[in-house]
Amino acid sequence: MNKVVETVTAMARPVVEAHGCELWDVEYVREAGTWFLRVYIDKEGGVGIDDCEAVSRALDPLLDEADPIPDSYNFEVSSAGVERELKRPSDFQRFLGSYVSVKLYRTAEGSKEHLGYLRSFAGGDVTIETKSGETKTFEKNQVASVHLRLE
Image 1 (cartoon, one colour):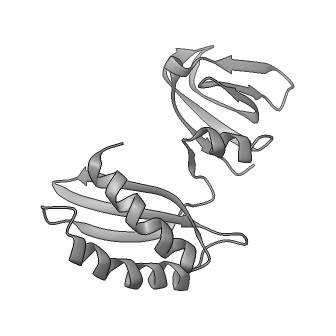
Image 2 (cartoon, rainbow, N blue to C red; image 1 turned 90 degrees about the horizontal axis):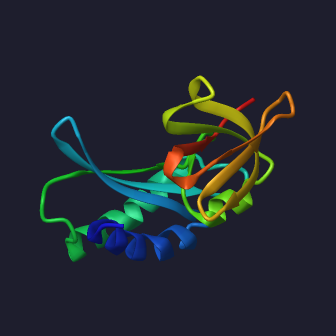
Image 3 (cartoon, rainbow, N blue to C red; image 1 turned 135 degrees about the vertical axis):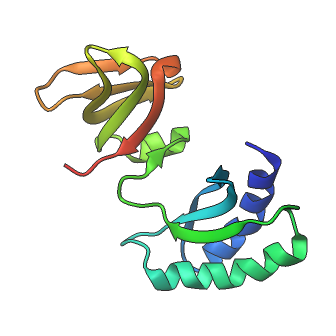
């Protein structure tokens, strides 16, 4: 994790929790020549625009005061989303049994994307069970990303 993300995560967590939400992720990325600081939140029953606005209004002045980012950037607060990416071991444990998309760096079994129910996550290896009942395990170094998917 880079220093900006670590700093903003530490600042954002208590603000997000004070608004009845959970901090899902923080990303600081450059897209089309512009820097974006994104804070993703979640809560039981789903996140609404009012949640995002409240967290944004509370966190924005703290970021301005602490000034953890020397460059100009766009600040966004949004829902983690229904098809969110699973990154941490706790994410995988929380969503065991859920339908997921496993994207690979290289083609395996004729495809770079495999869909199925998340059965296990151990040491970075991901095991899914397809709708046809086939079990597939992908090693950590094969997996580019894992996202929840709507069925």
